Length: 98
Length: 339
Ligand SMILES: [Fe+2]
Ligand SMILES: [Fe+2]
Image (cartoon, rainbow over all chains, first blue to last red; front, side, top):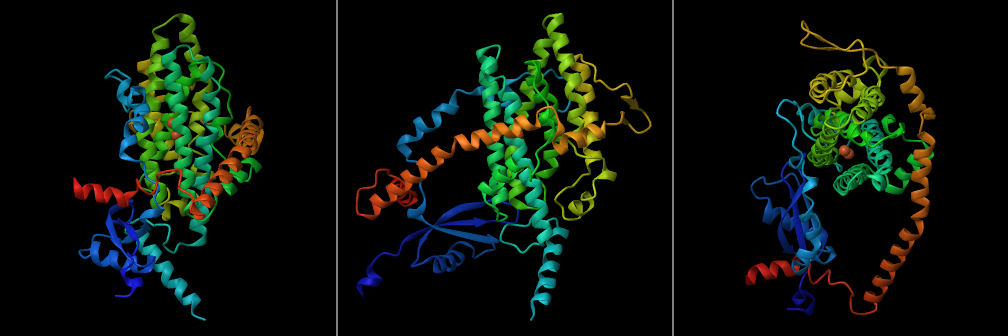
């Protein structure tokens, strides 16, 4: 095998839109030499049974993600803000449409 | 040249998608006028969320208790978020965020006339939550099914958050109504000022709204302005009764035959005057937005310069200072495999 082929193809994350009107949702990842082939592979790997009407592929190393270790400090600030939820406010039964 | 033929085919496909009540997505072909209508409508909606922070933001530093302050802060923060969801949806149509901000500041694009009225007492925070957010909900719930995908998805997120806005407002007013005579008078005075401008939020009457028919044919709108206005009145009257306030309209009455409320005519001269720039706070609202934009320029520039510097350091083989790549999906997949 040539060195060029042995070198790992980059990883791509695959997002599929199930039908018009819905968000693209992450379904998995695959390796490909470039975006065009990643799209073809994604079609073959993730949409063999009409799972989607549109595919996005994004190089995994282009995604900035939060790390599991910082989960607590990152999300804690919204934990104690119960007043952001509608159920925090009691509205009497006789008030309709609210 | 086959482009005319191609375009007819594309247009037929677009029309068929609309006829199926399917959604149009950003990469689909769409008529130029559909795109322009959406840019105008979604941008105006985004601008309203952003400008809409000002009337209530006015009271954050003078909230009557820590509880009310936390609630108001959270509410205004949500409105900023709503503006951002909607700007993102507009950008999928090929305009940039900067262009949109510039068009707001230059007056080329509008925002809802309601935000050109002042907030004169803390009761206004309650009234805005109840009536203004209430009217917005009435407008926005049908828009969750609008024909342009990104707009509909933004509306779904927004509607989920609006319920808190309306309820905190109503609860605030209920609390004041249980208070002193003076507090009850404050609530009534505030409702008197906001009732008619809230009805104006649904836009001009149907006969003065020439674009409505096309917008409905394209599935952008699903109800006319007057339909939504009537629905809002019917929903709000019993809420006003439960609260113990009078809505300032002598013609407001239940019509047994129609099973709906009759109500008086909105002062459309006032509406057009405020839309045209001559409301109580138009100049102040836009000047404030412009100042925030100008004052923030150095922050945007500094952040861009910092990002560029980080990139250069990484390009020259320096160690990345943020662990974004190692914490990315690639490593997450590996973690899941070993778990
Ligand atoms: Fe909002
Ligand atoms: Fe709101």
